[in-house]
Length: 81
Image 1 (cartoon, rainbow, N blue to C red):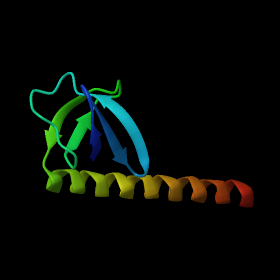
Image 2: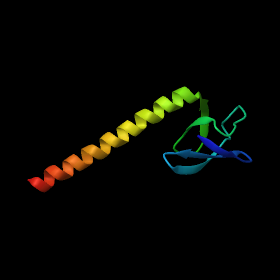
Image 3: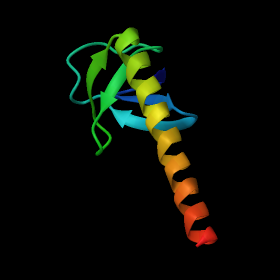
């Protein structure tokens, strides 16, 4: 989610982490509150609808939770062997 827009860049927030990204690849005006898809290199390349963003964020949160649960389960199994 965009929390600030500057000259050719936007500051975004996701899961409590902020990141400054380039808007060089965007063909449209970006506003505070917009949701963006961002390449690993830090370039925003697509604005997405809030509903789609919320669905994606929910799925990511579930995957991160499952990943953490799996790590903890694996550590418990190793420790109990």
